[in-house]
Image (cartoon, rainbow, N blue to C red; front, side, top):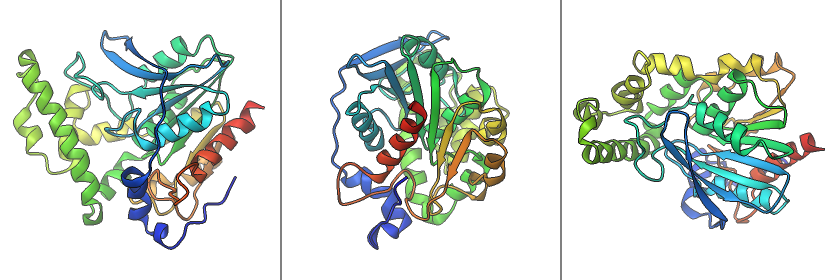
Length: 315
């Protein structure tokens, strides 16, 4: 693995986190978009790069991201240039308003399971990777589902594997920019769903949602309610993937920089990872949250190291 050696500017955790989103110029031309019907008669949109490979990489974005998130495009580009077909998932509601009053949450695995089993079944080898919220979803999937034999490995970058710990970090004043950005997007999406589907208005407590001051407030008003949890704290307890690490049976790479501004102490599960020989846990000193920026636009060390891990399993 290459060591990340940032210059002085990128040793600042918030600059390392924000720089790629704001300034990185990268674009991938997906070959097609497919709308996939889910098990519960909703839909997700997936973006493909198809080039006749026998290997497929499935990429899962973070909270309110998409297939156009810079880190998703970078990994799609890097792996496709090395012969892999790509699926970049757009979670429910991340393209158009979806067909259910609920959308997705940080431990939702059924859509990942659908894609691995249905879209991956004709491939010799399948790998799956996630970032931030999507990283927790991937780890939850690997630790709770019986994965098919052709799924060779998984990776997770900056997973909030202990939601309690990550939630406490979001409450810090230093992280207010992130929490406000996520809240704004979540509220806009909820408001649009409320306006376009009058039949759901009795279900959606739009007043409580719009008054939310924190991510936890939103999860109390919306996420916990619509997915059958007993509020936000019950949601955090049940979706935290750290409790499922012992059951991960395929090689899995977890990468969480020590300076990640969104990860609390519980998101560094050294002991849990030591107990499972299938997990490689890497905690570099710098990198921020899904960052690892460089003035060299492409590739970043992040893509190179993720590919190195997957390629080592692929051999």
